[in-house]
Length: 249
Image (cartoon, rainbow, N blue to C red; front, side):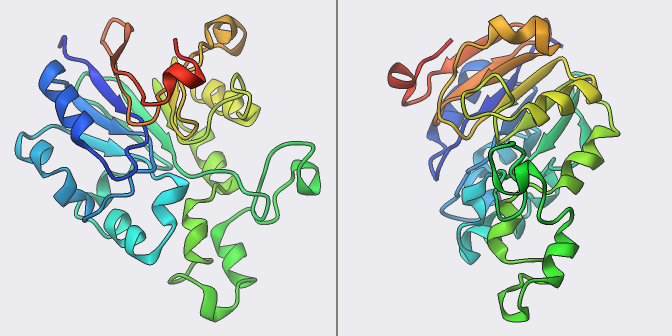
């Protein structure tokens, strides 16, 4: 198979750039890196891709849990089962894809020594957090709906026991000025060859870190779309909207 996998940076409610990139590359799969914020249920927004039977996968971003309506458009969508957060799936080209959606928050866990609790978690699991959340503020059996967009240690711990070829995260790994080394450790423990993230709306050059971190890392900019080819080549198909200001590869 010589078709690429497309990785789509934070759409924030717009998907026309994804459709254009698909027409240009005819990918084997399309992967979203979070902060989709669909204006309609996700399966309605992505109907042109569903009709053409492109395999779709995604992780959620922090903004996908900003409101009850957004939550339902993503987690309540007919594509809810395509959320790869916390698990590994097989892609059509034989590679494995793992995902970690959401962001680190000090009220849950911000793994930085300068953060609250010296980087330790306030809650290791959503169930633990829910027990300390007033009943009227819970979302179903979990904590407040906003924290469906938060990362808990249980999410990272569960992935660390699995193996993957590609790890997608909403947050950036340690190479990024606003990244987290715990994601480097996660990628290393999973044997990932490539780690790809969104969230920061940039595509900084991390190649100087690849040898020491043990994997290649890429950011995809705001509404940008990039292709990972079977031979490992990385191609910018549609440049992120802010990359000329924020830096690119």
